[in-house]
Image (cartoon, rainbow, N blue to C red; front, side):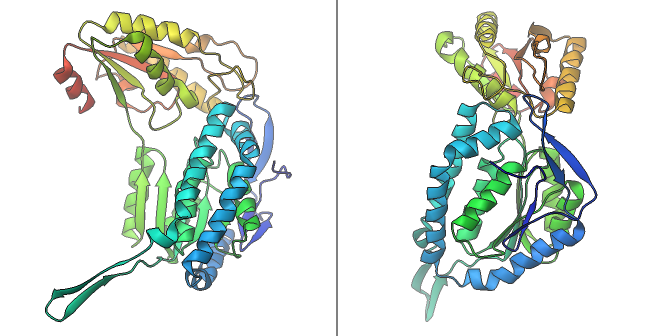
Length: 405
């Protein structure tokens, strides 16, 4: 585990205490107890991280691809060795169950596995005589310094969507993890260093909006990858593109699950529950809306309510827990505001997660609404919490229209 109570940055191959005045506490969502203090990186520190990445780029990009892949092989072996520790860090700072954290780290390892194939994956193409006297050749080159801006809900996996692939292809990297869950990023930095990654190739800075804007507008950052809310993704894309950067920005979603009237509810309802309430509903692929097609609606709601009642709400470190806390008390309060508003708008409350009685932490039990309609706020917005909406459709055409509205 991370030894220090104050989270450091990682710049130019060195772990550094920040010179920042602004700090924020990092609580364990299951207890509310402060587990670390996070200083926000100063403008100078972020500039230093970008400068370190820029300085490292020529040497790293000219390192033979098989040698870069060897770093990834060592990195992957370290992830395998430390999977239990990495999972425990995710549970401590995010709150999800240990099983969910372990699944997340396994997905991260799969990306490192993929990156190990760079000597084959990076091969170019050529074709002689595409026109008289003209041959064509395609060669893949790294772009330079790239920045990654990642969310709180998968503090290990989502950075791994970016870091191994960017680095093995010869780029250098500056990571700005979520200010809510910075501990996984620091352990990743330690393991990359242990794997033999040269100084400056990977860097970590911390902060919120100001740090993001600095990365998006800095002239030495060539590309940006982002995962987060749809609103922020649109801003990231527009700002980075306006500053001439390559950018990929992945936003949220409002995912619907259609349950047809001939479905076996004993088989299908548990999967709806798993999709809606896994990771406490804090994932962009959560199935947050179930649409009962035809006459199955009443039976579907009964089955969902029965299965939701079987979920055990509690700290992720308890092996019996199947639904952990949400990330912060403010998020819990916002979700309760959504629940209150849905009742006011006429949705029928079937399962009320507000009644969960746990002394500490930011817990909200599984909440299910029936008779949700497209004019309601809980349907229009991504709630990012353990709230499932049930809608009714007379046939599949009406259901598909709901999905595409």
